[in-house]
Amino acid sequence: MPEPVRVNVIGTDGQKLSIGSVQLHSLDLGGDDRNVFAYHPDTLELFSYCGYREGRAVLEGLNMDTFTLLSSLISEGA
Image (cartoon, rainbow, N blue to C red):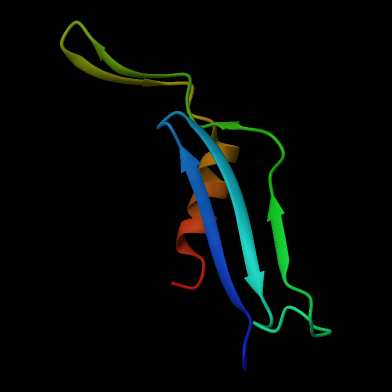
């Protein structure tokens, strides 16, 4: 492969996130080039509550560290 290929993986139920990344350096599984898989060992919480109260949309407890990480993974390469 002329360049490594990277795929970011995000699993979510909407509130909690599991993230990982796969980087392929070669399709030759017997070769010397190492492919890389990395993941965050903890489930990350994006917010504590999102819903409606008294007919109004409410978002509470937005975790900016998780939001920044999520934004970085989504926009990588854009």
